[in-house]
Amino acid sequence: MLTRTDAKARSLADLPPVQSDSLLALIALCEADPRPDKIDVGVGVFRDGAGNTPILKVMKEAERRLVDTQVTKAYLGSAGDKKFAELLRPILLGEHAADDRIAGVQTPGGCGALRLGFELIATSNPQARVLVGTPTWPNHPPIIAAVGLERVDYPYYERGQGAIRFEDMRNALRDGQPGDVALLHGCCHNPTGADLDAAQWAEVTDLCRERGLIPLVDIAYQGFGRGLDEDAAGLRGILAACDEVIIAQSCDKNFSVYRDRVGSLFVKTGSSEATARAMGHVFQRAREMWSMPPDHGAAAAHIILEDPELHARWLIELAAMRDRINSVRQRIAAADPRLAFIGRQFGMFSMLPLSKDQVLKLREDHAIYMAESGRFNVVGMSDGQIDRFTAAVVEALDA
Ligand code: LMR
Image (cartoon, rainbow, N blue to C red; front, side, top):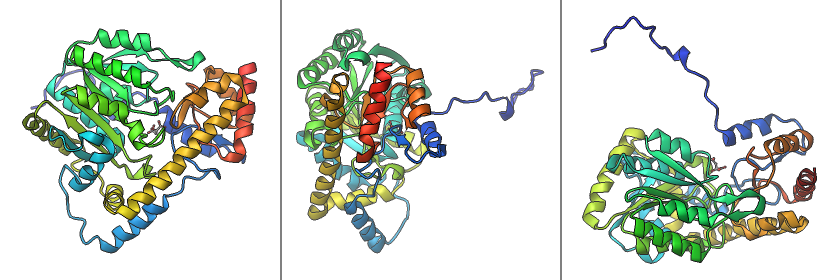
């Protein structure tokens, strides 16, 4: 029963304004700019040399087949398309694909997987703290806060030098308590592009195991760095060493189906029985939040992954996206010694050592739209825009 009080009831009109997500706000800002030569290197979508984000040819083919053959849109249940999650196993888990202590579920994109993974942690251990290397994807902190977990930040990256602050990372993980969560970027670090090397992954893995930390690996760009297997090597090392691991995976980028929201959550525990119980909680949390994930994109990815010919075509189109990312990186890196670090990094993002004022000046003077942090999407620009972009950035660095 509601209790009456004399205090003024709070209404919806009393809500304070919310600071909108900076990356999504950038899309609208850039769209509203009438300058025809504007450069949008804000939000993370792959663009080809002509500046477009085309639907992959293989995806178009799979969608055609889906439309022709799908006979029902009846509910699938909270797990979504179970076969889709199964088909992802070899791609994501590699040599661990047959491990029955690992179970997966389809989610609405990588963001849905992250939310669900943190919900699972909060359900099992609300005292767990989440160790987060900064800078990180701007949506990580709000998701962690939304499930009520405490966040402990540590510095991951030295912006001026384009280098990982591994000593700080090591110390932060050493200070972790058993049951704490180590949030790790599987590959193509967002927002810096600075990935751990093999020796660093090995050390992080040892620290997680020794300290009893639960690694939560966010892998949203598999295949955009060095290759599908290479990009998952760190994650697979963690799976070999740790009993409890959570993986938030996204197909939004590597299948180029951003708005369709295609992802998965994988959970590993020490036994198949415990994993089955944990998945019961995962399904319950999913049911409370979205009941079941959207089907279309995952159903089309399912068709691709199941058909050897389409699968092979997907790998070729994925390699073409990766090659463009890496060649644009090399071109930018060659423009000025201060940009050389960009050529040693991976994935769609790098972070320029620019102040917020410098970023805003690039926006005003050159119609270049990047995040205020200095993060830019390496393949946000067309081939024809690269020289203008680098010249403007060099000018800003000189100022
Ligand atoms: C990004 O970081 O730009 C992407 O992951 C898109 C998003 O949702 O923020």
